Length: 183
Image (cartoon, rainbow, N blue to C red; front, side, top):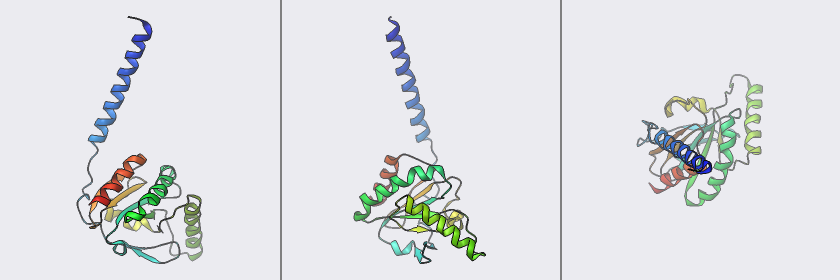
């Protein structure tokens, strides 16, 4: 057997092993206990101090995306969300970007500075959907924020259809958006 043929076979075998490992990892990813249950209701302030509730989006498919200004994976994912929001908004899809940055409500000056930092991130990332603050207050209702970003996909009936913790691919995000829109 020629040396180049042997090298090609070894490379193909390695690629097949990596593909299999990725498939097994994806297939064995635990399904969140939230899937199939109603999304917990909430009302949080946006950057202008206006209350935004999940109930106000009744009848829409909603992606609740928990993120933070210091989160590297969130910075990678946000442009994908902006693009997908633009593509699917006309079909009744909305994103609520819920900042999990710590805020200090006891100090008005510090709160103002924290809001400005979150707003600066939103402007730099060209976020076109509502940005809410004090996401940490929702963490327990949504199973804990063990990883950021954490995305909760809610269908038009208010049921959670998918949960993603940590960064994932744009195509997986889009597949979950389609799942939320379809139900």
